[in-house]
Image (cartoon, rainbow, N blue to C red; front, side, top):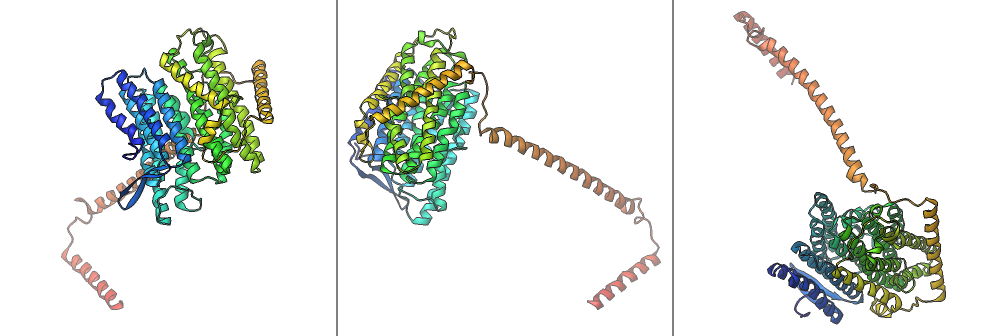
Length: 565
């Protein structure tokens, strides 16, 4: 089967079959069967270029398999299965088709061996994923989806332009290691940066993910940004600029997450923060760092999905994800609470949880290469993650105060999805060797050393102590109904207002000038009318002698001019 067509086509075939089937369990079962078959196929793929097609004189490599592409494809298949299991109860054909097309496009992109194939799948992820936002069917979701689509399509257009320039510069479209220094590579780098939510290019993430459907947010969190991380690792590993970009990415979302009331937006900021760790790993570019990037992407997809699942279950049962309106839910949603705590422990890098054995690879690589300031920033960011995702999410959702809400436990399919994801988070943390075996390079690293365990426990303990002190003293920002302004305010509100004010000023100037010259022209016309109108001086009867005189004058003047010239 693999020799016949790429793995991504399994998802496209499944999406084509869904509309034919009746709305029910059979259609939902297809959503689970396809990722399982794809997972087995990816696992059995041999390395190399397996499916090449000639198109308009270009050789397009649709399936280029190596250890880097395989690990991302595997976790994408797992994420597709878990996300679709979580959405088992959804009987919305649009969301079901979009989920398969989205996952298939992401998997196809990680196997792309050339920039043109990458572009095709890149745009596929953009077009498919926006329907997970529009499926909420609200006016706000429509406008958010349009903004999301504009950003994602723009990223693809820039990628295509970069590929065209790169081909003109090098004569090749092969998607491999590149060096910044030409227009083509810079355009490709910017395209990757938009999808990876670089600083000042990140607002689409916090804008769109919380606006999607409950199940759509879980699926969205798994693919787009991690595809960008893979692309950076494939094309720009060792680019030092990425170290500092990633360090900034780990820092600024912390402060927004702390003051944010919407817990799904908190998780969106946290996602941005975690991407920063991966980008730093790509920037360091050593084997240890790239292993850390791949491993952390793998773990991050699991625990971030788990956190979005748990808060999504709360939203499903209560109708809100606002921290100010929640609390006390542990009484009636104990399993969801436990799964949320497992996700929080994983993202906080507690020992025996997945984040502990993946994030440390990046930290160690940074210190080993002498980036001590960056290592300190990452350490601070790790403490911040524990604050806003490790403590804030479960605390304000389940424990902070008694909101009086007594919802039922999450549906069984949601619990199964959260339970399986929790198991994977713990399994990776307890026994990381199988994950390490999948990484791009040989792993010579031991996570569970006394120094590492003690250091991490100290970090977590003092972070928890700081949170407790801030809460007890009232310094910690309370959960309030509010709108937090991010840098997107500049182009969504400020710049449009500036443009409108300038346009209004220019319109007033134009109207004033138009009025001035209109009055001048009217004055000239009136004067001409007085001279040349029916009652004007020119219209009067002139004597023949006067006319002959004037003709003689004009004729003489003409002769003089002709003589002088």
